[in-house]
Image 1 (cartoon, rainbow, N blue to C red):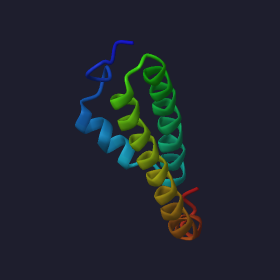
Image 2: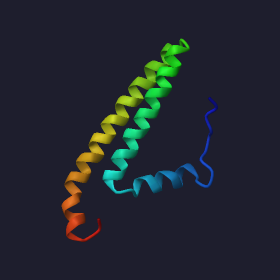
Image 3: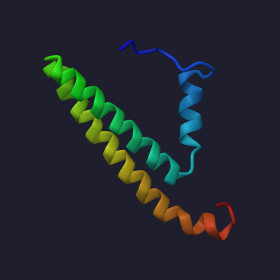
Length: 88
């Protein structure tokens, strides 16, 4: 698989800004989906004997899952304020 160095139409800074502006419940889903993708890459690399890389991707997947949980907590905290301001 060829890994691109950018996403067409976005600088990495702009992409980070867009993701950072997501509502926390949507950010949680994004992190979870990204963790799943990294898990698939890890499995593929492990099958190819790339043990060090698959080990690093295991940690990355774990950290993304942790980020997902933190985004979920942030949503739980902010949701009442969002509902109160009719921003749902």
